[in-house]
Image (cartoon, rainbow, N blue to C red; front, side):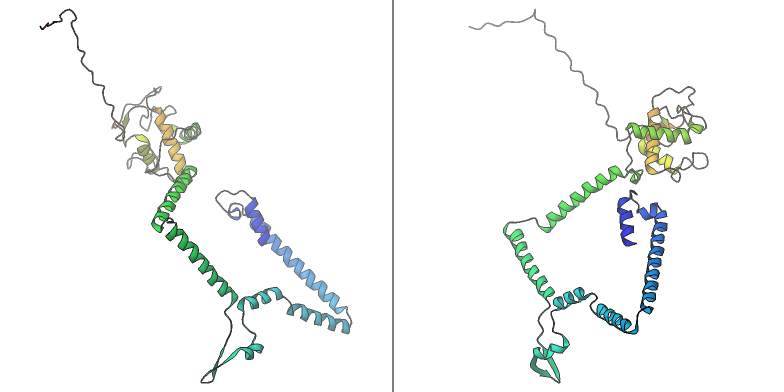
Length: 306
């Protein structure tokens, strides 16, 4: 079951979810494997019992003796490895390493340190030498510098992750989308959910005109995204769409809505709200005209000195 689970998990493309979560049928596959394993075990034990009863009494004794020997040797490799790592003497041989010390009947054994402990101690010595050479002789990066490097790497990784995780967008991080695929998706969402109030050309009906520069709750991508997410004015504005649309879908439809700006709808609704100016926009600096200097070439005074 474990092998089957790992194979299914690593071979099935399930995106960010575990395969067993995205495809519940995997539970059924694992359950069938469990039932199959139980059936095989029951059949094997049944056959073993039948064959054992068919043996003579002497053969049965030999079989039982071989089973005891097999069980005694089971996991012998692991047991021997543990004994080597422990490094101590078996209790039967402790008499060989008893010291002369005697404290109120308590005697001391001269057991050696376990090999694993010694190896780890030697590794720390080697590590200390490398650390000394790198950071105190060759002036390697100190902890503060390493922290700054790791934080910068983490920042880059987060930014890269955000590029591919559009659903993390919110009213503070949303940006105007200009890709054709995003605008096409926004158009589809608009035509499915918004034309009943704003018409297909954005001219407005129940809802306001989206083509002029007047806005009730503010224009720009952040304000439009927030209006779609949280809804309009209490009691008379549009409903909140954050339970129906994903953040990336709200960003797409908000970007598409802003493409109506400056267009001419068939039956535009009268302007509502106030003219909205982007506070982050850089104001244009008018070019200062430099007055021309006119020189009259006919009135040139020439002074001659002796």
